[in-house]
Length: 621
Image 1 (cartoon, rainbow, N blue to C red):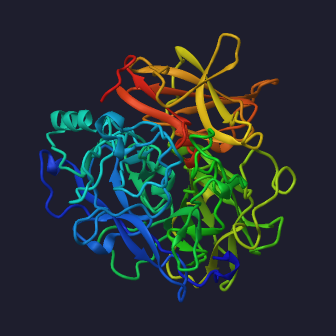
Image 2: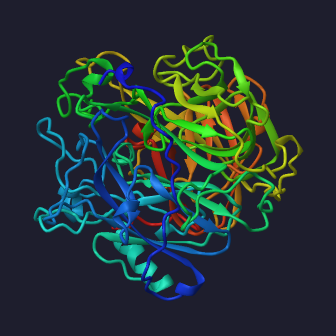
Image 3: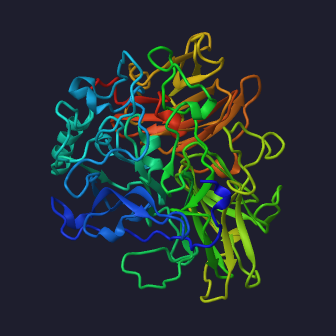
């Protein structure tokens, strides 16, 4: 579908409601926790504005109420130090109980979940004697709470996936990932909860700072496809000693049981890019040829996978599940919780008075008060906001005094290509001003409520205790591998890798299946140095921990401090090309976790590594 034919700013922004808890929770400790049963289903949603056709998507929802299924998910509202238990159900079956194949083209030549491999061949890179077609079997899922401080069995480990409980699973298929059974047994032992087939139950202690978290699928080699299909949602953690009293920040946010017409002044915004076919269905490349024109030969004749694209930049911007929506605001302060949910696109956001003029003139600043891991030390005024994939920004935008009827636009000055760094329009071309350079519109309406919130420049934010001295420094590498086959055009990427450095400071790339090299002692504080030997910036996410950004250092230069908006706790950091990015973390949960690039196409093809806290760990199967 030509994105220029899609009308802009004609549909209202969806403000995701809070998802209701389970009506009939079961299991030990129910009174001391919040309990949810959340399924994954396929359904049609009006993502494009009417009269354009609806889009078939996947989404999360409460199994007690079909009306709660939505892309992105309704929000889980959680309270600090009050546990949450979620039973995640793979309900990707039709009315007859048959499995639903994927909406998009699945490349079976990657190192992926690989259910056809059975128990011995699951979670592997299969070997083929000829180029295979796309995988059309049952879809594995596993949900990760991004930024959560979760034990290994609840972290959504990428090899702990599971298929739906369908009645037509092909004989010999692996129905669960390599770590599922061990984590199922540990969950029963630790929490007294048995996992039924087609499900996994996660326990989130919420023993961390109030912050903006989000959940999404994390199945091995399929994250880019499952998230693109709709599997994402907000998880907002509130209260505790690291929150602010009610009324200090703009509110309210959606809550269960809100009457129709409730006005919200705290709003989460999940920003994503999507492309569409003319029938309304999602477009995602079904061939490597889309990326660079290389039409084969593919594996096994060469080292190029037939479907996987190294990155994908869609042509239409979607916010909370609708293309280019509008939001009517009062002339008062709003709290916006922003998430970059794109697969590969970095965002550089600005509030402008014109939708398409470039460079855009800033009409209102963002006051950033928090990032991935909670509040910043102090509010930071920004004319534009850089968000890498999976990063969150908690901001206050003040519409006070703006005349009724004024139209303002959230625009994007990031690039329609991989991000390096630099000044938009100088060091790289900005996004297409007619399409991906526009995100949503704000229309100032009449005042309808009294604003009792504190002006952002006067806010006193809760402090946090910095991490202590690090006992270990690890030197890690970010690497890209290009094809070495003479039949393939020069410099064609075949996968991206993490790794270590050798004694001479040269990169030592490693694949997903290589032995664990990062094994912090339990409760150790470490500095991880991320040496980026590629030409692009990568958002690096470390599971389980909230880290501090220490500094960045060009390969041939001196260290520079983190940006003002990076001086709180983080779980995702931008590692720029040709630089060393240093982060400090305390590893206080034992077990097996992962760290990876959050460019979804990269993490799905080797740019992810396991780490094990409390020893070297062992390979489970």
